[in-house]
Length: 458
Ligand SMILES: Cc1cc2nc3c(=O)[nH]c(=O)nc-3n(C[C@H](O)[C@H](O)[C@H](O)COP(=O)(O)OP(=O)(O)OC[C@H]3O[C@@H](n4cnc5c(N)ncnc54)[C@H](O)[C@@H]3O)c2cc1C
Image (tube, rainbow, N blue to C red; front, top):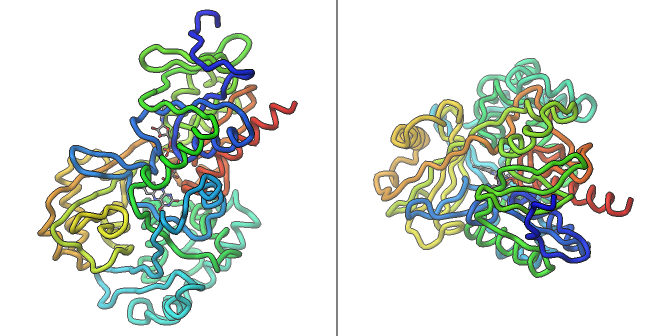
């Protein structure tokens, strides 16, 4: 330990080191500094935000993929408000979304907001009969009733079965499956129904039921680093927290007496006996494997698989839609499409993003091939006109960020408080009820902070 450089600002207490400045790391840091505890965040990237970040990719402003802020989130809005961020400025609320299927003559138009757009919401459920017949809708009822019940009463068993098998067991017909269940699952977390845990499907919507009056979706009014994560980081710094970007941690330093600190890629070391690993799943596993691969507690987590994501983002001379909104494209490679030229990426005539489905198939394909499939998907759902005016596109992909929401994986998600004294985990993959979402990341950071604060009182 004496060999470690005393890099930390020595106060009465060494700071807790938080590895990663995604929402999980930032949320953990905010709770700690709010309780007067010193923190040092070490972030590998040149910017804060992780998956909720925006950056310049070879001359074009991009993000990990377009994000929607769900109105029933609780902890994320509270955190942002506490940090002085005005949600009404940060978000533009959408009251409807569309589902377009290549074989359907009509588009499905669904209201999302019981309070602010009650008629659109009600007519979406009762209407759209040319898109989805009353018989199709009826076939969903037993499936939804059983799913939400099983989600509460036997979640482990529900997690053992795929969404496709569960839907078939409960008599969902093909059309309802493709036009309703697919957009609400693969359209959000891009995995095909046969690889999607039924528990992850129902579990994501369950917290929304008692908060249905809060249901609506918000688009960001700027890049997510700019409008959310950088202001949150500034609030942390204002309360005394330190944040270093371009600081990739390559090793945890663990001695016979426990945690000693961390080492960066350039060899710089920081002393700490309290560390929160808030990196994405794969990097977190790599950091922990070196010391804890034989430890029983860590083993399920170390076998938790990651899933890739692939997004297509483009600028065009014309917007593809007359207003910014979300469209799902079941039956095509386009999981979801978002026109963003009046919200997240203003100042461009046209700016849109696609989250592609079946990322396992696409992750290693060349950019040109992914772009070809995206164009084919857009054409299939009637969005081909503006595509000829595309001026720039980028394929933004990642292989190590999400835990795979496949059957059987729920029990491998680790708690935030580990059995190693001083070692905590945070990240959307850790155990919390909101799955792999911004809300989930914030919850995980709060749980890690609660563990640290509790340890401090022992
Ligand atoms: C395409 C896409 C669409 C999404 N859509 C939505 C949506 O609509 N709604 C929603 O709620 N959520 C959405 N999400 C999910 C949401 O972005 C994540 O759940 C959330 O941002 C995860 O935060 P995190 O802090 O757990 O992880 P991350 O954001 O991944 O943060 C981890 C951080 O750790 C850093 N790091 C990694 N390794 C190291 C290291 N060795 N040293 C230092 N730092 C390190 C990384 O650079 C990163 O900044 C989407 C994600 C993607 C990719």
